[in-house]
Length: 245
Image 1 (cartoon, one colour):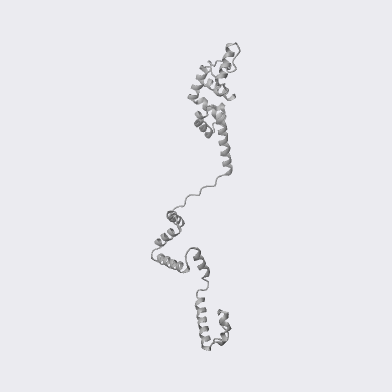
Image 2 (cartoon, rainbow, N blue to C red):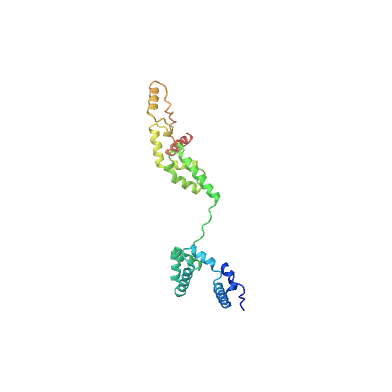
């Protein structure tokens, strides 16, 4: 039984004010309509948040629901076609997607995990690289670029324990370095050109002093002849003298 003595809550204040003056039949019809509306509205109770989300995506609840139904029907007809449609919608990399599916279901062997770098080894490599750079930039090691490959071999094999040892042995073994040092020896030039005063003015002053009887500061005393030794000994002597500066 409907209590028509009071108006429905949603009625405006003006209608509520004249409610008691309305005919009973009219009040019954208004209440019946109100109950019908409440029953229908409760069927969609809880859809409010979905309507808001649809609006954020530039659509409405009806269009979003139709898209869902269409996608569900495509999945039933052809799952691959439905996945392709989703890939287009969300801009997936379909090759990467297929690869991931293959790995997940054991169709493709997953790649071996890359081991995490050892921070200690990283520091060691950095220090070694800096040491090599410093060694190379030392003017005393002028043949570094010529013998670097052989130095790497000696250090990697453990035949040389330091850069200096590897450099000395590599120079001794290098025919090119031997030729350069022998040529300098024949020309009575200093072993290391970096230690010579190469400017024209200073060379002229040194020459004038030599003519006047004073010894030139640019010319070192010639080392004792090593004619009794081998070419190998001459190269070792020259490289060691160069290393000492």
